[in-house]
Image (cartoon, rainbow, N blue to C red; front, side):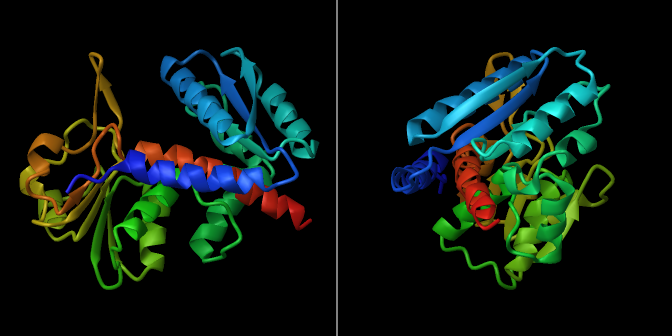
Length: 278
């Protein structure tokens, strides 16, 4: 069965829109972008468009590619102190001369809609529930919940160990009592490991890397990859052949990416709630 990420995401966006309509405060997301990376521009425009659709305001700060790091950190600290800004997002990747960790960690954890600050990552891995969870892993868990997938005792394999997707989704699956194996570029016998997976999450950025013969029949396959190639977009899974083997599978596009945006919007509300407790 092909998972309709667009439908699931729209339901979540409708919920976010309804919550925002009941609020006295108009929430604002600040997006910081450095340089003119074409893919980043597309992502930023998508965020702006989706915020507008649910009734959320956006502000975008654009910096030249050669901007000094201090200038970005100063802008973040100004936004941290501004009560009219409820969420802050730094569009990644950043140019090589900038220290991504230092810039992300300049964000107030209560305004960190991407959940990438050391504080929010630490809360996730410590099992503390008042942090912000990165939008893509959160979206994956939302999909599994919608499918009524009981993860307890299931074997889950995560391919990719980024702090944006791989590590947090492994932790979230673990929190639901799945038995989790993390794989990466140095993993040996990858095919055998994948064939044991009841749930397979792939986030490595290699087009059609996972083939049908690596998938356990009736497994749930979550494809996080977005690989642009000559005008087309492919996932990390060879979808055309894998769809006949998997029990459930997310397409690319139209799968996890839709949920990422919806959960990002939800995270702005979560940030606002955390700020309101102060």
